[in-house]
Every structure is written in structure tokens, then in C-alpha cells.
Length: 246
Image (cartoon, rainbow, N blue to C red; front, top):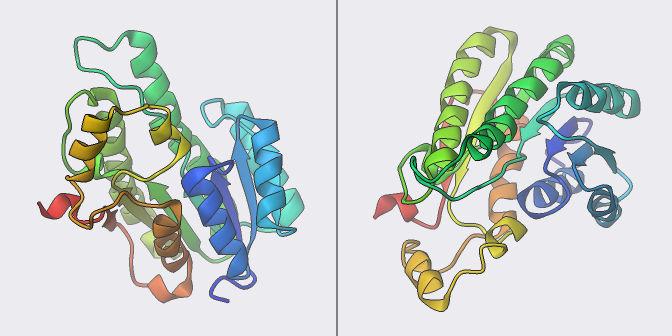
């Protein structure tokens, strides 16, 4: 029970990586609040995770909803130790093909949302004597990819913010780290409806011979949320089946 007595907010918790992290946290003794934009999906996820998981509808791109999320979490959990900034969107495009709306939407969710939730949560984490903020980046926080200009730029910003926040809050015993997954089998990836050739090509980019599963990310999130990682901050952890080793 590595997280016994701890509490967490997890964004994008209705499915995929966020839901897997919520499940892993609860198994390790934490109480969690998950958020997302789809109430039905959220409630279903919370029920599947268990009684120690509560759902609060929130769009992290909207400041009032973020503050309401934190207020609700404090009201229900009594304290806040951990934040997992997992909510994200991926809109394919190049510097020429992206329009202003796509670019703004990507940064509103992937970057501004992370900043807004972290800003709202930090006073509560500080009041408990410290804690952990875990930002979900991407392998594209570290390398480029074709047709991913807005997404790669936003995930690069997530890693840069992680390192800066780690320096700002290290003396307060608030650790800030970044998980950088490769291709993980989630609803977001499934929505791309890859052709067989594209699937084979992308699979070959992962020497481990398979795409990731949400649980592959959740295990590392538990470690970074726990006291076992008490001397780790400002770090980027690829979870990518060898993608970056090629």
C-alpha cells in the first residue's frame, strides 16, 4: 500500500491512462478524484475503479471549472497530496495545415490546463508539507514526428514546465516529474483508425514488439507519487517500449 493515506486529482480520468492510474492509486491505498468532460464516461470509470474514486466533471481549459475541481476535491478528500496532469488532445497537422483554432485548442488543454490546475493545487499540496505533481508528456516531448507540430510543441512545453516547476518548488518538498509515453493503446489512438500499413510501421518503431497499455504507465505513476521517489524531481521518464533507443 505505497499510497496509503494519500489523495490525488487525476485529469482525463474517464478512460485510458488516467483511468489506469486511478485504479493503480486506489489499489495502493489512495483516494482519488478523476475529472474529464464526459459525465457518463467519468461516472462509469469511477464505479469501475471503486468506492475510493470520485468523479467531478471539469474541462481543464476553463479556469472556473479547474478551480471548482480543486474545491470539490478538497471538500471530498479533505486534503491534496498528488496531482496527475493527464488530460490531453492530439490534433494531427503541420505548421502549414494547422489553423489557429486547432493550435489554440491544443495549447489550451495540453499546456494551459496543466498550468491552471497546478497553480490551483499548489497551495493545498504545500499546506500538507509537500507532495507530487506528475505531468503526462510524450516521447514527442523529446523528439519530433511528422504531422504532429502542435502536439509536439505542446508536449515539449509540458517537459519544460516540469523542469521549471521542479526548481520552483523543490525547497517546499513538492516534486514535479514527467512521464513520456510512446504509443499507448487508448481511445485517443484508436480514433485515428490507422491502416494496416500505418499500424505495422508504427509498431516497428517500438522494439519491444507491442504498443503500450495504460497499465504500463500507471506503474511508474505510482512510484512517482510514492515516498519511494522522494529524491526525484525534474525528471523525464520515457515509457515507450524502446522507441527512443532506436
